[in-house]
Image (cartoon, rainbow, N blue to C red; front, side, top):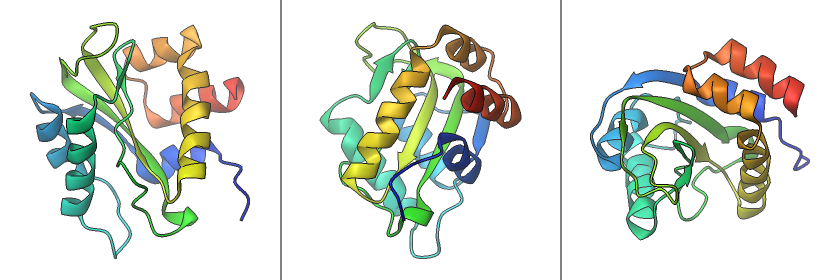
Length: 154
């Protein structure tokens, strides 16, 4: 399979979750790891542990109220298992972002190798630089609206 990734497809696979509760990244990761559609060989506990361990090394907050939680090492077994989960938080949380803004949305990256992880990150950062995309995130746009915007902006 090629390493060309369709961000919209990866988000469709992972899902969009709104009003997720949690006062700390660990609480949010614990909650969302049970909500994410995982392949049969992957457990919610393994995902939560991987996300939490990475966050304890260095914040995944990137600024503008956005965080990119991910494991330190890819945890999915195949390219087909890769997904991105968009998580809108009920209340923004402090994740020590470079711009000191509280995080209100997380793009949880579940990837299967470092090369695909970096490619996906690069595509997401390009989207985050577009003011119209950030505006959609700020109003907690749903999956269909985000898909359309991603396809237009990509």
